[in-house]
Image (cartoon, rainbow, N blue to C red; front, side, top):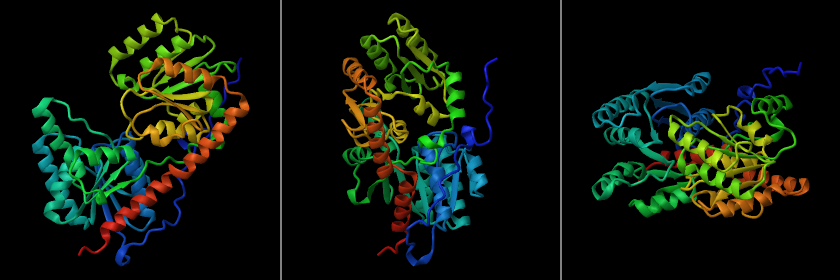
Length: 415
């Protein structure tokens, strides 16, 4: 009988690392009083905006402030409960104008009751409620722009969509999560550049660090995915949606022509069964049944990166930030990315990454061939450069410190 490793508490990826022990945040609160900050998001289930919200609530508490979070709730509320941070449940995911108005009245009452200084909005529907509430209470209003919201819908629909999106550009401070998003904001909305701050998203280096992943976790995931030791692994993480470029990778693998590779498409279809079937048919038509595998959401991405030979993002549309590629570099892995959006900021071409034109299967196949042909020494050198690059720019502590500095700006007396 094969040995089946048993997960101990330390080996369980859910307990792989406690949150970073926050340093003494180097922030000076004007007047010596730390703020009460209410963050508003639609839900607390999963996602970059939600992760940033939780991280900032914890950091503000450590810095002496009073964090509050309002949302419809979700699994991530547990993290707030453990830290004894107040969560207020409101139907903030609704785009119904009547509900948005009701939410505005409820937020205004919360602002008055808790003496909120700053309201920090991270999504459009709750941002409208927050903006209205701040207008009647005098609380300071700020936003984080997490995505390049589209303007689709024809001439009339496009104007309405632009107006709806504009609430994210109305903050007294607007945080852009990348230089790409900053440029998008300044190009599409009448925003004073002096109000915009670029604060890149940050990862937890206690989680995404090779030495924090135990051998047991690696063995467990390798067996779950049935990965042999002698085949290189190409990993493309991301939900199954067309713009993430799974079809581009499949076409590139067909052109590459190597049957010794295993390519993992890791991500939920979120109900897009038609697209999943299309991918399965494409894999079969390309003769890649023994090469390409699809698996649902992975709860231990740090181990997944470590099991990989190269990590790919073949996005066909711009990424606002692209956390996956930053995480992979933190784990010391070579990466291949599309030359669009924030990926042109979050890698070093020729040093930590291959950068290829979007939707170009030939270029991706060539990059894969080079990445899979690296010697162990070359791979280690790329990994070391990638880890140093991420540690210098994309840590959670840096993101939190920079955001606390924005809170401090808004606490300064107005002239």
